[in-house]
Image (cartoon, rainbow, N blue to C red; front, side, top):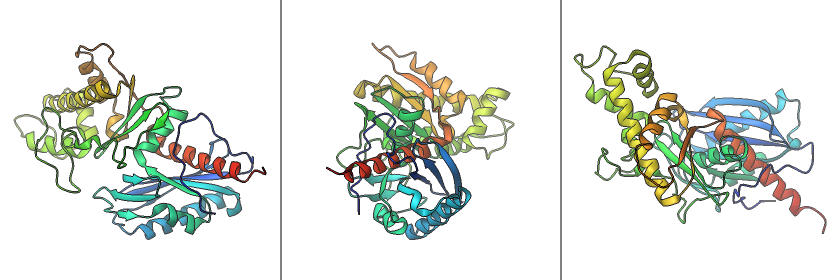
Length: 338
């Protein structure tokens, strides 16, 4: 049976009615793939990871997923028949209704990939897909920093920047599935030139990990810093806090100010009381602290709270597991005798 995708409404703790059922949650990245096997309560039983570096063929990624699923089932001494559903997050614009990844980042370059049907054909179980940042928001709402919060935004600040928007306890996708593509937001201090296809947007060119690295290289000189020219965003932030490096401090403040502007603008429109920072760069304590400080300087009736992800790097995989549990529960309810 081919199940229609679950709309990812955020109810608390959906469980598979059959206690022996298990699900697979998958986080597909441009350079790596992670998956986890979870039981009916959402507890992770086994994990597996592999490399997607240099892989643009979606079918090759599905083959990699199959190897990972076989591995976690063997480790857990479970048969394939124990699986009830699978859910996957992809880094790009995803049509949840059709189960199609419309477009991914330049790292993968996917266009109109029918990922849900590929997973269902390969694994023989119902599948669902969504944008990876949306799944991170789902994870935080169910088991992380936003439990019980009806309206919030999850900001993934990594190589680029994306947002998972939760309104009235449900993920908001937008009519063309592009809600949350805030990396292209134009903010003070960012370029106003339109972004080329598959290139970073204005916001992420200043506050995303790759943009921060590029800004460091652009401003770097031996007169300004004793640090090397090639540093990652988190290394720059470490140097700003631990070493008091003046150029690193400038970059940190510039990134935090730009991110704070984006949060402030979104809070005025969405009136969300909470913004959760995640991603490899967003989780850095110095960025979170500096962003919070800059936000407090704005005058507003109700400034949003900013806090780090409680799930860290597991936010996406946790959200994928929860979505898979939703799918399995929906299937179970459909098969109940009437």
